[in-house]
Amino acid sequence: MLTKQGDREINEDSAVIAERDNNYCFVVADGLGGHSRGEAASQMVTAVFEREFTSTETSASGFLSSTFNSAQNAVMALQKTEQAQRGMKTTAAALAIIEGKCAWGHIGDSRLYVFKNGRVKSRTLDHSVPQMLALSGEISEKKIRRHPDRNKLLRVIGIEWDSQQFEVSDEYEVSECQAFLLCSDGFWEFIREKHMCRYLKKSNNAGEWLRLMTEEVERNGAERNMDNYSAITVIL
Image (cartoon, rainbow, N blue to C red; front, top):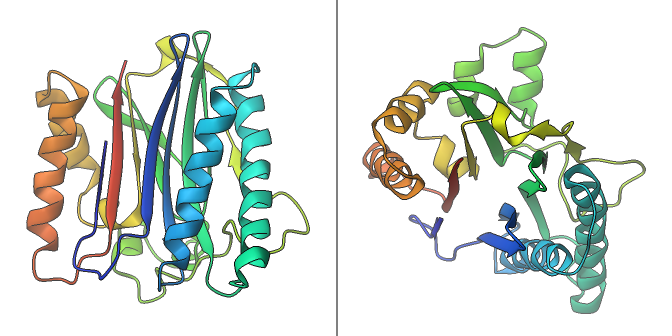
């Protein structure tokens, strides 16, 4: 796991790994708003996930659904307490592994990648303007990384919801997956999926995989006003 400041004044990202009886929860959150308000939102989200995971007994998908709602409620309450409604928002990507089954959820443009046989099996789809353009066929997927509207998000934690804004996957047997990468946009912006796969094949463990990818992210982001960047790697 890593979370780094990049070239920004503060690090508004937050990440956590929680464990309970050989079950695991992994979360990456990317705060928005500046002036430490995004930092407060992302830290609140990871704290809620960690607390809920160590105190509740439920399925992987059930845990994610209830905890995304709890995180939203906690951030909205914190906004009122600190009178920071305009600045305190965050994305989040989360993975739960419980009793041999896994599920994941996300909101915003923090991503979760699923790998199988050294390839990307699936990834979460960003809740952003360029992702919407890619889904409609107006731009290619590879153009999302450099699109001028890439930071325009359509869904986040920290705004009023009229309906559920996060997405949670179906549950899968852990054996159906090889590895996972959770990361903020400051990380995936500077590494292509084919390189994620290349480094996965070269790595003996999750730490080595993360190190190789981080080295590329930092090379590609050098002198480009890097955003905060965070990532968690899991190899099963």
